[in-house]
Amino acid sequence: MPKSDPTNEHALDVLGAILLSSTAAGSRDRYKGAIDHVCSLPIRQIDSLLEQALRQRVLRRTLEELEPHFMTARPDALSSLQANLEAERERSKNLIAMLDRIVCAFQRRGYPILVMKTLDHWPDTGSDVDLLAAGDDDEISAVLESDFAAVRQSQSWGDRLAHKLNFRLPGLGELLEIHVGCLGQTGEQETLAQGALARQLEKRFGDHVLPVPIQEDRIIIATLQRMYRHFYIRLTDIVNIYRALAENAVNFEKLKDLSTASSVWPGVATLLTIVCARGAGYGAAPLTLPEQIRTATKFHSDRTYVDGKFVRIPIMPEAANLYLQQLADNGRNRNLRAVARLTLLPFLASSAFIAFRVTGNDKGIW
Image (cartoon, rainbow, N blue to C red; front, side, top):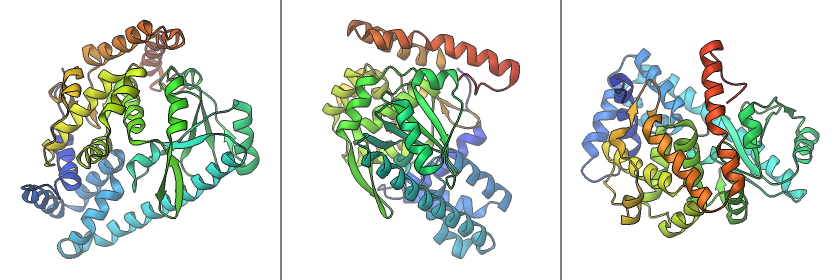
């Protein structure tokens, strides 16, 4: 297994402590130590840490934690920090307003729609916008093109398989991605997508109320992205899920039922186990997961490592075993559509790897 990059692991330790240790009993020293460390850094290294916070989708939350401390400890860096914070707030405000317009346009036409992944990080938002909708491809495209002058982007092989459409909208800096009627890297999760749309709830974000998945669906969707597609975990995933668990916001029975029906219960259990271990490592109050999760977990946090960017999941054998179990479970459940799509994943991944080695870019495939 590759060894962790000590520089980036330390950066994640600092950011994680800033975001998770402030309210944990007995961890105030950990929080204060992280804040003091950042305040003591040269401006160049502060900028580097904030670049990492941006990559981890925790920039705004980090800036908001640092601002009051910089007022007294680092007045020389305060104006730059406040400018970054204001820019993030304005970006989020614009994004939320645009999302509200988009959601209303689809709802007026009777198309089920919700915002997923993008708002899991609130008040941070990602570099793109993810929606889940039900409808015909051409009809969905027509809504965006007629109401927002959107320009549909070319699809990669992976986009076609996942049934995902990409658009550029004037006035929206982020790429808009719409998953149409299914989820998963190969579009294998059709029933989950339908259920997530039906179970959605409305939550307030800034000045607007938007439809989002219930907490259990949010965790399953995050699992699909982290454990079955990208094989890495961002700090924001750890912060988001850890806080949901700490606040008792997760119905474990419902989570198990939904993820078992989607053949990803082992991946969900493993992600929760890793999140709890990483969160406690950053100074958060330790959490005890139910026995059903501990039993279903396939590997633990000690099998992960930190490279130059993220907490990585080893592909062999950890991620490969999760994939094979997902394939086998779908076979036992006679979900032939999912089996047929999942068997294409190794070929897609191999093509992307070859393209990356030859051209340095896998975007046309993955």
